[in-house]
Amino acid sequence: MTTKEKKRSILGPAGDRSFHLTNLILLSFFFLIVLYPIIYVVSSSFSSAYAVITNKVWLWPVSVTLDGYKACFKQSLLMTGYLNSMLYMIFGTLVNVVLLVLAGYPLSRRDLPGKGMFVLYFTFTMFFSGGMIPNYMLVKNLGLIDNRLAMIIPFAFSCYNMIIVRTYFNTNVPSELLEAAQIDGSNDLHFFFKIALPLAKPVIAVMVLFHGVGHWNGYMRALLYLNSSSKYTLQLVLRDILLLSNMSTEMMAQIEDSALEEMANAMQLIKYAVIVLGSLPVMILYPFVQKYFVKGMMIGSVKG
View 1 (cartoon, rainbow, N blue to C red):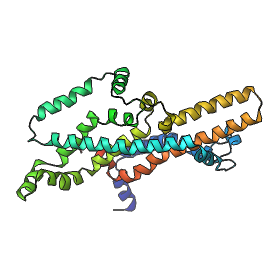
View 2: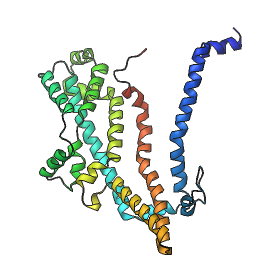
View 3: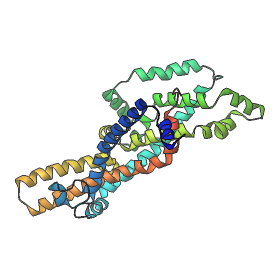
View 4: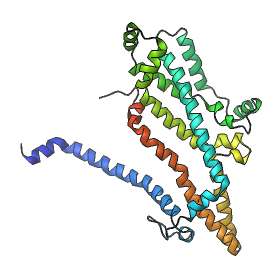
């Protein structure tokens, strides 16, 4: 077989090659659409305020400066919001994952008494929700308004994600494995911690990523339940900065004032620097879970 024939056999028929080429072009196009805003924001965060305001930044930084990041670290409220978001994300995700595993694993066991009743109870809550106002009244009656626990407790459990965890245990931890462990003298707790949990690393990684990103980007719950600026999340602080930046730009267009112009320039620098800093935790988290992400996402899929 010649080199040309080998290459043709690897690529497949002409129709397959056309299909793969079309996919490659489309995916490259969508990749560039997603990539460019990221490059623009990062470049703007390292550019001077004048270059950003006059729209001179297109791809690479113009008049490179770190003033935006220096201004961010000087803002005490900004750093407080950053630390608050980290706190809510870490403890909130921990509570979420623990409850999901503790609910999903027992419901995957065939010998659980009243299993059908528990499944019905959990699935019933998926179809009925009180909405924003009843949820607010519930949190208020619990005394959690302007309390850090309001960012964790009301959203501690997701029935949909629990079903995903349960499905994973059903698929990857068969009953035969439990029977073999019991023959060797293992009890339920030993089997759960030594066998079931290590096998569930992919789905746990996916849940950590889902809930971690959800807590980090949480905006409405913080807007509804938090009143003190010392408890604000980064998203609320960023909202205030963006509003102040827009107001400063509009005022600068009407009033010629050097102090006002300097404040507007500082707001422009801080705005893009905060966006970059706000995206860092998720970007740092993903490499640690991407090893298990694909396997965890393909739960219940049909393999061809």
